[in-house]
Image 1 (cartoon, protein in one colour):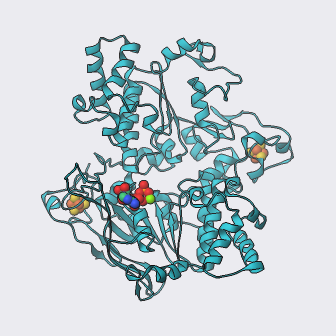
Image 2 (image 1 turned 90 degrees about the horizontal axis):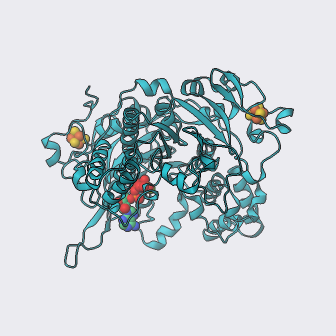
Image 3 (image 1 turned 90 degrees about the vertical axis):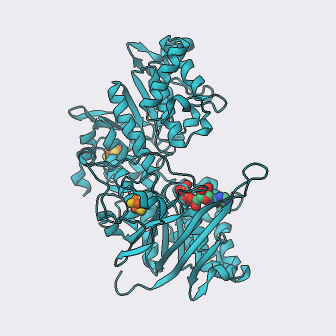
Length: 333
Length: 290
Ligand SMILES: Nc1ncnc2c1ncn2[C@@H]1O[C@H](COP(=O)(O)OP(=O)(O)OP(=O)(O)O)[C@@H](O)[C@H]1O
Ligand code: SF4
Ligand code: SF4
Ligand SMILES: [Mg+2]
């Protein structure tokens, strides 16, 4: 990224809560704070990575940003308009620009429709092409994602996982989006197919000037594909920075422990590296810890951490952290 | 044992345990020697006494091994009584000790819980405790950490490393994660399309791979420990349909080094070094791919 980056999306204090079932007959109705106060920008043309463990709110964030779920609060500014305030009709028209691809490509593709119809429908809904032009565009889209245009007449079940993911990508691309939420697009794929899809997403981004929010739990993949990375835990961002800085010098204890926990395909390195193993489990988002949500597992937590919520602050240019003791190492021998 | 989904890793483990559902499956041939006996020749009853005793298993989903209707206590003590011949109270004490060993806090209380009262990571710890409780000679662990988060995976791998070493238990660890094998294993088998394509020490697999599939796989994974270079070198194409394998080498359609012979002759394992074997007609090294 050169020159001053331009924000394609500006997210401010985004919150998305889901009601939980009542505890007992007269108990209070609680809520899961799936996304709890996120503030960040997505720059035009970049890939912003979003990592964190299962249930921390990554998918909800991706959906809330493009309003596939309605946020409980906060703003998402896109082209000068706050998406959270738009009517459903206005949002439907904008949907064309804000797309998503899923981990489970199969579940997201209608099994009774032919591939051509699945992709063509997206074109029809937004009046982008009809008749012969539509068929031609479908063929072109299949070609772009590395599939044979003749596949248009087949059904999703006739394809492998990687091919279905390509179909899901073609469908998202059909409407000429600006922004695509990639929600774990390669997690379900075989190791030898992952590189193919990663390369495809990168090629498409370059050619079509796309902006991605790339959700993953695999930190190595994120390191490869993303310009910047956000680390999430229990509905909140812990750290956000340029890719290189995050891996070279993680400032948040959670980021440090995540990086240290990922096994690396290199025996000598595996034998020599110091592993920091967090104790305990991820607490339930229904009842998150007080103060810093990470304090129950943080190796350097202190009393202050139990009481005060750490502010989301920019500790270095472009490097955001939510920790009272940002920069302190957790690797104490 | 590493390989992609559908390449036969789990079928191998289930075959060793004689747990292949038959019908429709069938162990079509071969032998499985374990402690001087061929497991494939044992009666169902003899096999049952080996399973869960000398030979135990950990699956990806802990609920494959746990009964949701029974307390942990019942599930642990019955096996221990059966295989180790302990009294009820001794079995309970032994089980609690096993839970402590795998890091379950307040084990004497948690042993009375039902599986659903535990988190996913805790359940997998319980399964490992059960798998180890009868002092097995061999544990088959099929993707034991795949369903877990990375910080929990790190806990479980560390646990497996220490307990299995302490107990002197051999492990067949099945995974698709090359990082996990790099940190855990002494020797590695690489499978592709139902066969072993390479078998070597951990260092040879990673630093001197000789099968084109292994070479391609290692080059194609993004690395946490490296600054992004360029495009990932990808393996082209798809794994073959096991029901319609081509004549010759199963990797031929995707192999950059394919030659005439690969299309007619199926390569069998041959030695290329000290305890290092590949199923490939040609002599390819990592340098050829770079
Ligand atoms: N529609 C919903 N109704 C109620 N709770 C929900 C809903 N969607 C998500 N949640 C809850 O919100 C939290 C965040 O879920 P989310 O799916 O965003 O996490 P994630 O980080 O994407 O997890 P994973 O890595 O498993 O995909 C979880 O506790 C989840 O159970
Ligand atoms: S605020 Fe305290 S508990 Fe939270 S990450 Fe920082 S040091 Fe750890
Ligand atoms: S036998 Fe031929 S096709 Fe098969 S892996 Fe070796 S070189 Fe490639
Ligand atoms: Mg998700």
